[in-house]
Image 1 (cartoon, one colour):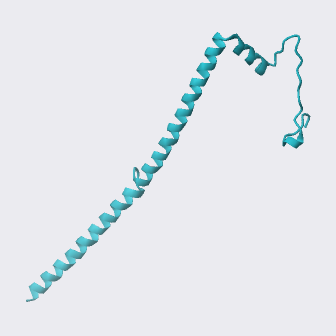
Image 2 (spheres, rainbow, N blue to C red):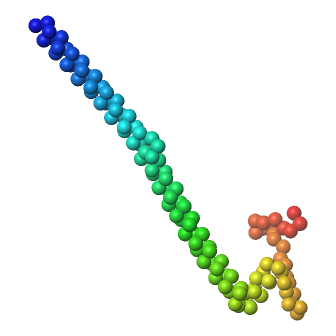
Image 3 (cartoon, rainbow, N blue to C red):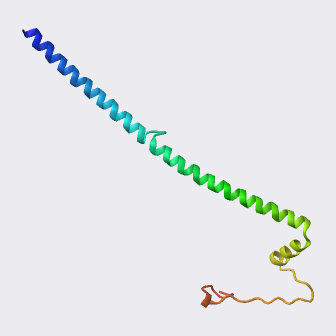
Length: 114
């Protein structure tokens, strides 16, 4: 009788120990699934970064296309060259006059000289 009671007690202790170990392993796997390296949260962060980079690449591709078109225009169109020379280098034709307006405080900008 004593052996049967001690055997039954050993089985219940083993079951409790088994459930405890299984619970700890389950908890550890859930924690690493969400918070570990390459876990759910890390994957979501990487997806967000991926989409940001993808958007940046598309914007840079548009900028490249615009610059290529500008280069082609400058190579082939004399009016484009003249426009760039006037805007960037402040070149004027001999018969032209340039009017320069000072920025005023009312427009939210400081006047020239400050």
